[in-house]
Image (cartoon, rainbow, N blue to C red; front, side):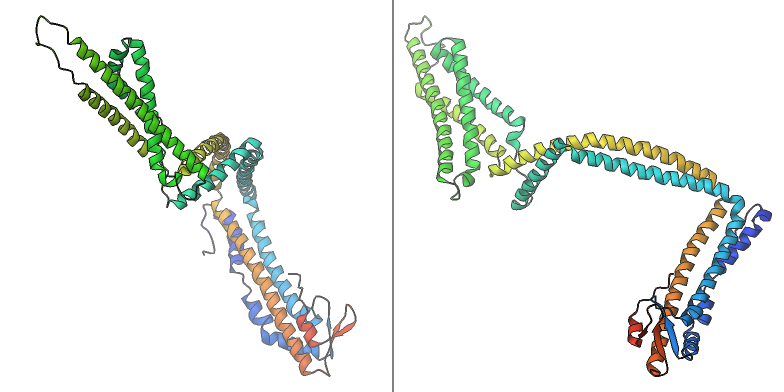
Length: 440
């Protein structure tokens, strides 16, 4: 990094550039290689051991260690602090502008923090709402069951066509087709259009429901009549199957009978003598008319069965849980949408305020950008230097203690280790296990 930063006002910035360069040039390499070198520390230990007794406090520090390790470290730290203070003094003319920018940056941080607090409050308020709690619990439970079915069927979605609006519309078309097929016969049979129309609608509804039940039962046959089902459940399925078949038989039987009766009535009407003879008279065949009518009714019924078969899933439980999940998910998303609007309002208001303050920071920082860069570099350098000083102190103290232990073991009769805080002797191994507390 350059030792100085070019500015348009050198006279004002010369002291600042000088102080910056001196601070950035500082390092503790000489401290490690000179005063805290292993050779120097071992020599200091020998000097302290020459007195025959080495006094140690409860922090594991000896008198010699304090002079050989801590004093040089404190001197290096003091020197560094002096350089930092010198830089701060040189920075003073720009301090007001820099402090103003920092205050704006702090305001931005406060706005961001306030935004997070408000968002957290909204989330907590949402969770504390009993209504939301019930909705969320139902949603999570139904989602878990739904995912279980998806895993069971290898991520296949349930067939839910019968739950859509198009399904009853198609069955309505089947009903209307049935009405078109049978109305004429019933009108000839009853002779009253209103009664004929009512009969046609009733039988059309009956045929549509029969097709619906039959298609559903056939699609779900393996489930409804599985051995795992109870006899009562299987009997219920058989009963519905019988009802669907009986409904079909009623429709076919009544429409066939009505068509036969209408055909016979037409035949009796042809017995009268006509002045035209046989010209323009359509020959009535009751068996043909009944057969065509039954085929038409069966065709309409089969269309309904196919629609029902395609509209149902083979597992009715899968359909039920899918319906429940979709309902619970819709309620959950509706509740989330309400809270989302509140969150968006909080975020938008905070972002607008943050943008205004950041624009102000950008505008103000242009005039003192170089000085702010210097200050940031000094702050980073300060953190690194203090870390290195602390590491050097610990490393030097460990080297010094190891040397004391070796000297005490080598000169067991001539050197005594003494804890001056509690007045007891220490063995070299006790001292080795004693924790060092250097206060750095």
